[in-house]
Image 1: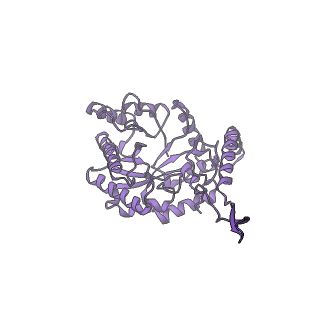
Image 2: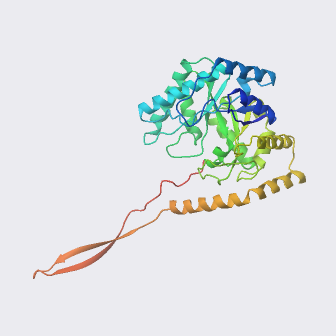
Image 3: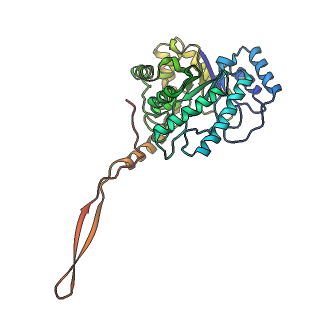
Length: 360
């Protein structure tokens, strides 16, 4: 299995190769530029050649083992054409950097339609992907599934299917499944039956041939909370079992399986989680495994409780409420005096749009 992590690239993209090697990663992700800025200095030929040389030296195939993460600024589904076009410029720059580095995969968040129609946003996103494919040569554009709902694209697998349907060259498009995002969107992959059901849905809706990568994260928030809150493996609401399923799933062989768990600025923590994943390979649900699962769950108990309280509070606000309104009708008598008569009416039920949904 190609277990890896999203590593730092401060000081140049070539530094990411050494950072990945230091934690024992067999694959890795990185940012090709600052993910929260529009402008970035160009990628020099010297840095690109250094990156490729280090990959070769340390046994990484940039075409298969490296999964750059796109800028958080990109939103090509934006109904504002000027802003969508600006996003495309950044998107294309990232793809061109990939090709200069010999990288074969590029992962990005599909964005939001904001106040537009979702069907229009999906088609618009696909049109930009088609443009990007025409202006590049080899890199595969990998769409990530998302945690949110409503105007966000990608929490429903059907969104991704629709975008792919609009893409002309389907050999240049793929999908990255994030375990936290899937769970937060309502797909319960925490049990063996739920894990199987999710992949059955993925295969029937999107198609397994498009699966290009996995982002590996536990979830601080409960099922269907629609919150993108990553947690260390085994400490969140997903629990350790799903990561044992993944570590022993032959259908995931050869894919970059990339950790994005919270480690602050200390990439060495990823090394410990990679060792945990390797320990899970071939592991049965025996006494030793049960003890490890319980110990990790205990470490995350306080954060789970905190997030559950927030989720329940939000859910209470989302429930339907009925309000009464006091209206006053003025009656005037023949002699000119006024009499007030109070009338109570009931308004229609109000439902908060933040209510969560479960993808079942």
